Structure formats: structure tokens, C-alpha cells
Length: 190
Image (tube, rainbow, N blue to C red; front, side):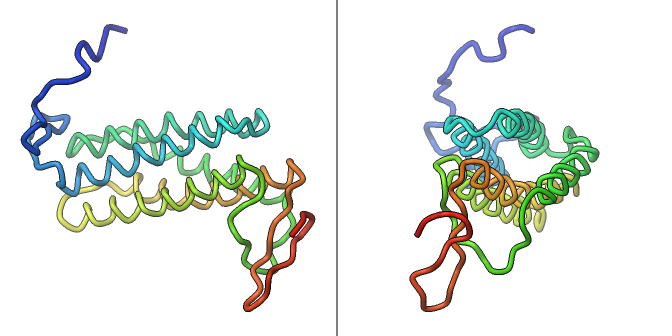
């Protein structure tokens, strides 16, 4: 593969504009830039989950997700372009089901936290929800294909399950939400 970036800075955005992948010039606060900026932040947050060294199976899964997010970002940066295969959504659903079978049933809401990797997965989940909202907002004004929205919705579910599974593997347990209480844990410490 050739060099994709010969220069890191171009000076073309200094006045508040940016180019989309098709060459269209838009303002820096354009909803399309907002949407793929949120997806980029999500990708970085997932990289941070892996930097906390969860078990290798989770690392491989999350690297695959990062590749998917690059494809999703390509769809957002080039209007009308489709890059994220719909079968990636089914793959997320399969992993959610597999991981969820290994976890105990939820009897109550859990508080985000646990191990460093688990807590970071919870942060990634919230950033994923924000990215989903940004893509949805873009879709009100411009054409956005369904796979990116569906993928982000399933990904937030996956990240929730991944956070729980990482915490289970680390022995951190979960802090169950108790209205008006200091909380109790399910297998961890308070």
C-alpha cells in the first residue's frame, strides 16, 4: 500500500472549514464532521480499553471493532459511500450472546466501574451512545445508511457486556445500584 498521508498538516482548516472525502468543503461544526469525530473518539476509547490489557480474547474482539469503526467512519466522511458490511452487525450480536451466556443475570442496574479495563469499557460504551446520537442527528438532514446506526446501537450493548465480562474475569465484581444506599457488590468489594 502506498503512503496515504504525505503531510500531517495542510493549513486548509485554519479558517474553520474541512473537506469531506468526496471533496465537499464544510464548516468544522458540520453534523457530518461531528458524527465521524464522535466515531473517531470512540475508536480511541476502545484503544484505551486495550491499553489496560484485558484478556487476549477481548483485545482481539476490540481490535476487530476498531477496524469496523474505520469502515463506519469512511461511510460518514464520504456521503453516499457504504463500507460497513451488514454482516458485522450479526457478528456483534453473536459475540454479545456468547459473552452474556457466561455472565450471571442482571437483577439490578450496575454502576460503571470495576477493573481499569472494565471501567474504560463503560466509558467507551457511553461515548458509543454519543456517537450513535450524532449519526442519528446527521441522518435527520442527510442520507445515512442503516448499518452504521444499527452497528453503533449493537456496539454499545457489546461494550456493556464486555465491561461486565472483563470485570468478572478480573475478579472485580460489580457494584449494584441501590436507591439511596451506599451500594453493595456482586462478587467484588464496596
